[in-house]
Each structure stands twice: as C-alpha cells, then as structure tokens.
Image (tube, rainbow, N blue to C red):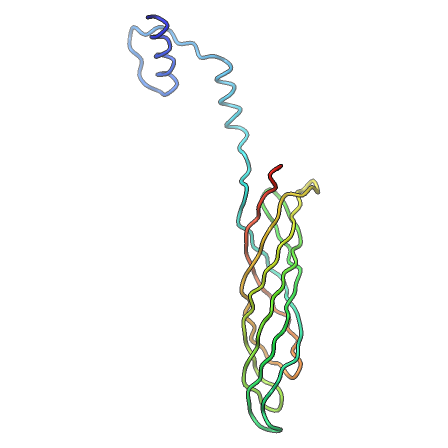
Amino acid sequence: MTNIMAAAALIASQIGAPLAVDAPPVAVPVATAALSVGAAAAPKASASSYVSASGMLSGNGYMHCSAPRNGSGWMSGSVSLTGQLPVSGPDGSHGTIPVSGYVFLSGSCQNGSGYASGSASVTGSGTLYGRDGRRAGTVSLDGTVFVNQYVSQFAWINQYATVSGYFRADPSN
C-alpha cells in the first residue's frame, strides 16, 4: 500500500493538490524535472503567418477616347501592372516577390485626355530566405490596387500599393 500512496502523493505534488498529513515523502525524479524545463525553453516556430508588402507597381497602355475633335466623350483602356515588392517574414526571413495584375481604366475625356480610374487585382508568390541564406518558405500575396489619374492616349501608371498574404514555412524548418 505504501507504493500506491507514494505514487498518489507524487501525482498530487505535480498538480499542486494538498497532501495528507501522513503522506510519505515525495521524491521527484530528476529526468522528469529536466524534461519539463527543456520543453518550455524551446518553442516550435509557427508553420504560417500573415505578411504584407508595399512598393511601386507600374505599367503603360493605350487609351481610347470616343470624343470627336474638340469635344467630350468617354475613354477606356487596360494597363498591365507589375512590380517587385520586398517582403519580411517571421524570424528575419526576407525576399523580393514579383506581383502583377491588370487595371481597366475608364473615365470622361476631352480632346483625347482626361481623368480615368479603375481597380486591379494583383497577385504574386515567391520564396523567402532566412538570415543564414537558406530557404525559409514561400509567400503568396494578393490585393486590390486603385488607380485614379490624368491620362492621355497613352497611360503611364506608377502606383504605390500595399498587398498582403501568408507565409508558409518549409516543413524542414
């Protein structure tokens, strides 16, 4: 019966339960104490996390204005936007991710130019590398970019944008 009481006293001491007055002395095994300290000191990094990136997207394209000479009308056109955005991930991982998308612009025009606006869905994906230069994982980005600017028959777009997405750590990390 003494072994059962010792085992019960050991469990009670580990969970913080009060011990009976006549309980046998409790000896905590050294391996158990060392194991619990080591497990708390080395947390595992998460497999995925939220990231965001900001930078310039640019592109150009032709615009069509339906206005007669010296008159008013409607203009439209599409522009391919591309950019290389720097991304910082968890634990100092970093990389430059290519993003791209199309913006369809429309607006009123007079004498072949005017204000046009539109939005583009941009996406991109790539690899992030750790501080040691080794591959840390992949990142996928997406977002919406709004453009509103004065254009003529040829549109030049330079638009600052912020997109977001997720980083997925490589299984080996």
